[in-house]
Length: 500
Image (cartoon, rainbow, N blue to C red; front, side, top):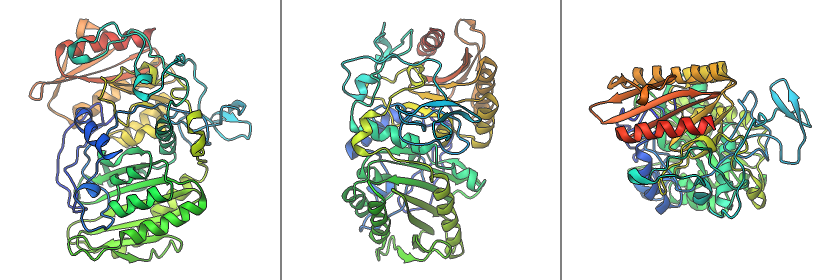
């Protein structure tokens, strides 16, 4: 189940960086997105602790709190520019796969490019492109909006229609960054102790200003100066050791030369003698080409490594008072894992970002649209592997994705998951119910509006929240509702869209 759609709770303090905030664990941070959207726009991309509370010019390290970042800009997926990550379930927001001109043929892991590399699954259907759209917000609105009452919520009865390609460079950056997400491992896959989602640190990025999610102003300045134009970060923390967390990121630069300069400059920008947040340069014993930073006061390590046109980044936080020196080799190992997983990623040049497709598989078109102004960086089309970064129970969700052969995810006010068939979609929906009831005991079963079959709904009486999930055809869906009217109308709308 997606972090944004199901579990909202579990706040616990983190002492990782000085700028840490309480974490919001669960599938996805659904209710926080509208609140934080304005803050994100004001900052130019993501809100972060490092960029807000950190002082003195050091690279503060990312916020390990788990608050949500969001953007009112929506974007979908693209099938151009990169070969997909090995073993990925095919379908991206900025999916991985062949360029529009590449020929495809069926391969052992799905369609393959003419070179034989696995590519995204061919869409069985998609959203029909519309003309005249010039902004992500307008592109995200359906042409079929019969009602806009109940707080401006749209209840379409058929899939939305989008412009075919990214209407702006910024949208293209987000599309490509979601593609990149499919190449990064979820931290849990590298170390099973890190399971609790750090919401704030799971996000696609745009330009250098996006680095406020990870670094302080000097780092942001480096990214901007050297032309960063995308990236993705993902983070989890330990459930048992609340101060321990692991954040991984890959940042896109115009060339290997720019990335090489950026890795060195970002590390140098992080050195600080600020007594409140001291960072010193350290060597990574098993990564001679990498650059390390260590903060003994707030036990944490950072690592930077250039790999092609990417700068790979690791942030490792320990428990209060912990000596992090013995963990320097772990930072080098995490960087090596990132280098291996991103080796086949080929960035689309900045000048060609507007050639990326918004919704090549049609999954995003089938998600209910957010209200105007409530969009987030999660809005768009994702590959199944990429969207696992936003899922609350990585082990269970990745297993059910594999069993159901989920290949595409569309995220808006609701989230839809495309499986191989109806049986797979029903399997996904059933896992979501198990996940929510296990992680949020306050939710109890309730009758689906209208007694609709194949739908499971839950109510949290104390928090006045509603949740529904179900399967229509090969699609599983989930959404939250704030009142009983929205619960019923959203269900009717979602079923109509998926049945159209």
